[in-house]
Length: 554
Image 1 (cartoon, rainbow, N blue to C red):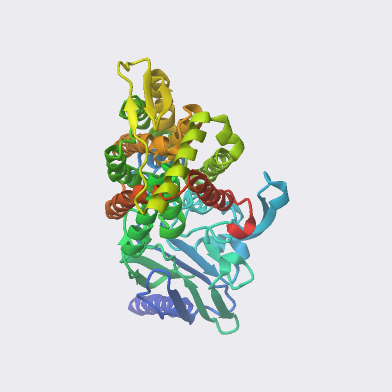
Image 2: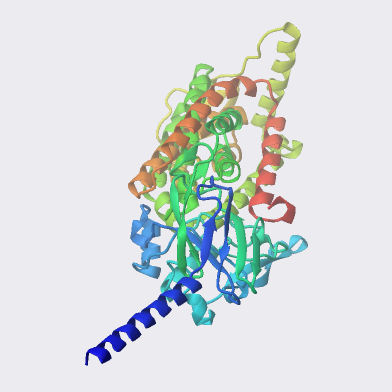
C-alpha cells in the first residue's frame, strides 16, 4: 500500500510539474518599452508568444465604467436603459496581427445631402460578438461578455457614444479606432506598427495612445489574454479635467479675447464662434460618461455671459441703448433659456448632431447678413439707409477735422407703455411691441440655450429684420439678450449635472470681458456693410466645416 501510495503521489507531482512547465512555456514573455508614456505618445510592447499563434495586444483602462457613473443626468439615463449595469474599460485598444477576427473594413458614403460634394470613406466596422472566434474571445482582457462588447462597440461607433465614453476621436471622418492592425494604408492604423514572426512567436507592437487621456490614468496591458503589466499615462501640458483636453491656458484666453471683441462689435455669433473654438481649437471632449456637446454648452455660455457686460455699459454711456426694448425682450429670453432649452438639448443634441445644426445656423445667418449688407436691402429700410448715410458723413467729417466720430443717441418718447415703445435714434423714429418682444424672447432663449450659445445669431437678425433697427441700435439690445440666455442656460445645465469646466470658463470670461471693452471702440471705425460681410464669410467657413459639405475642410 505504501508503494502504491508513493507511486500515486509521484504521478500527481509529475503531472503538476508537467502542467506548470506547459503553462510557463505558453505564457507570453512581454516587455513594456514605454511604461509611462505621455498622452498622445507611442506605447511600445515587445515579447514572445507561442509559435503559430496570432497576436492580440489589448491595452485598456484599469478603472471600469458603467452607466450610473456618469454625472450627466441624460447620459446616465440613456446608457442605463440601453446597457444596464454592464461595466467596460472606457479606454480600449486591441492591436492584432489578425484584425479581421474583430473588425471588417467597410465603405460608406458621406455628404449625400449635397450631391456635388458627396464622397466615400472606409471605416473599420467592429464585428458582432457572435461572429468572433471562441478562442479569440478569451484574449480581450477585461472584456469577456457579449454585453461588454456591445457597449464598447456603441462607444466607438454610435454618434451618441463617441466622446461620451471613448476618448479616441473619430479618424478620417469615420470611426474611433478600437481595433488596429499593421496595414498603415488604413486611416485607423495611423502610427500603428505590428510585427510578428509566427515561426518563433516574437513580436513588436506599437501605437499612439489618445492625446485626450487624463494624466495618471492607469492602463492594463494584456497579451493574448494574459496580463503583462500596466502603464501610467502622464500629462503633456495643462489638462482641463471637465473639458477632457490638454491646452495651453493662454490660447484659451487669447481666443476668448478675439471672439469677445468681435462679438461686441456685431452683437452676434459670439456663442457660435466660442463653440467652434472649443470644438476645433481647444478640443473639448468632456469627462468620461458626459457627451462632449454637453461639456461645451455650459462652458461656452460664459463668453456670452461676460462679454456683454462691458459692451452694454459702453453703449449705455454713449446713449445707444434702448433699455425698455431690452427689458421685455430679456424677460422672455430668461424664461425660455431656463425652463426649456437645456433639458431637451442634453438629451437630443450629442456632439455629432450639435456640430451639424451649429453649421446649419451659421449658413442661415450667413445668408441673412449678406443680404442685409446689399444696397437693395438697405434701400428697403429708409431709417437704416438714413443712419448709414449719417454714419458715413460723420466719419468723413471726423477724419477731416481730426477728431473722434460721434454716434447718434437714443431718445425715448414720453408716455411709452407696455403695449408700445416709441423712440428716436439719430433723428430717425422707431417703435417696438413689448408683447412681441416677450414671446419672441422665449422662443429665442429656448433655441439659444439648447445650443449653449447666447443667441446673437438670431437676436441680431430679429432686431435688424423683424424690428427694422440698424446694427448700431440692434447690437446693444442683442448683447442684453445673450446675457439673459447665458444666465438661464448656465443655471439649468448645472442643475442637470452639467457643470462647466470652471478653469476654462474663467479664462473665457476674462478674455470676453476684455474683448467687450475693446469692441465698441473698434465698431465706431467700421462701416455697417463691412461688419456684416466679414462676419458672414467667417460663418460660411464654419458651416462648410461642421456639415462636411466639402471633404477637405473636415
